[in-house]
Image (cartoon, rainbow, N blue to C red; front, side, top):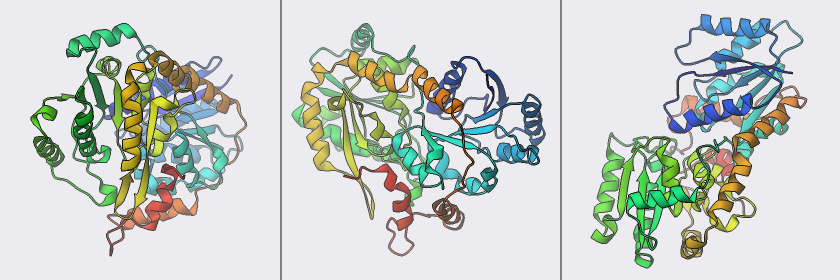
Amino acid sequence: MSKIALFYSFNPSNWISCQKIVFNLLKSYQAIEGNEFRYYHYNTDTAHGTLLNHIHDLKSWNADKVIILDHKPHPLPILTFLHQEYLMDSVRPDLFIHVYGDFSLYYKFWDMCSFLTHWKVRWFCASERQVKYLQQMLNDKDSVSLCPFPIDTSNYHFNQSIRDQQRKEWGVDKDQKVLIYTGRLSTQKRIHTLIKYFSQLKIKHPEFRLHLYGEFDNMADPFMGVWKPEGEYFAEIMRLIQTLSPEVQKDIYWFGGVSNDDLPRAYHGADLLVSFSVHHDEDYGMTVAEALSCGLPCLLTDWAGYGSFKFSGIEEWVKLVKVTIKPHGRLISRNELNQFSDELIPKLDQAPREKISKTSLGYFSIEKSSQRIQNELQSHQVQFKGFSPLLKRLSVAHQNFTFPFIDSQSKKINQLYKDTYCAYVRTN
């Protein structure tokens, strides 16, 4: 039996996807039988005195595993106080850290964690390519394990009656098709590319309509030196839509942000999920995992975490469009997009929704996540060997340059970006 201390924020994250991730990871740990758990709240407003009390408590309890479950704030204070508490001890708990996409926002703080070489550390990443990305930052590649963010099967699974009811509510008949996108409406997610794709799709397939679920943001692409004023991206998308024909415009529906209860029904009612995201840290793709859990075919960029979703047995229902890192940005292959779209669109009526759902949930259900975590908890952990020179380069660049990935003279993507994100693209 292990005594497991879990650190996370008891207050829900501002990111809806992270709310679900933390909750489902917590359930994954709780599903492991024969362990004792203690839960410690950690947030931006947690006083150092409170945090020290947490550390004293877990030590007096003789915790043998310490889990960093949440994505923010950065756990530097937890790790620092933990190291100070056990400084003179030869026996220490093993550390397990779940890595999120915003790892890249905290290179400076990770660089300050050099003392972790005195600890046994296991890193969990949500996708195969995020594993490769993180391995570049560490001197020991074997300390990184794959643990996809889990899906709650009680909410996400295929049900034909839900599909029939949702299409009835939408007023969609059997001859119509629904293209769906869920998530942030952002430059990073290439919504403008999605709108253009839909307008071209309508030429060959007038039976399609586009459903957009999510809210606009103003994040633009700061890693690439792109900033936008408040409301600018919304205005850009509206101007783009106004250039389209009335026949296309009338079939674009924006539902705004919806509750988690509404999303499974939306995935059921749709015929194809499309996402052309090239967000610099698309570490996983929670919306894609949820859509697949509901049996929905997907057309995606082959970028970062999205590359993990082409499971054996349902390859023809998940198409991944190649992305290439070019001097002026990340380029989505137009040839592959057209090819894969032509292959997928005509046969959507034959999609084996039940099979897609069961195959996908076999990969990232809470039960599967629990098994992966249990295997690592029971394995012998080794001493952390420290961070690599690449993480040091990233830490220095982010502290000294406003746009660390852009060459100041040419304004093109620099070698540091290529060295960092080469792990996120398909090599062949």
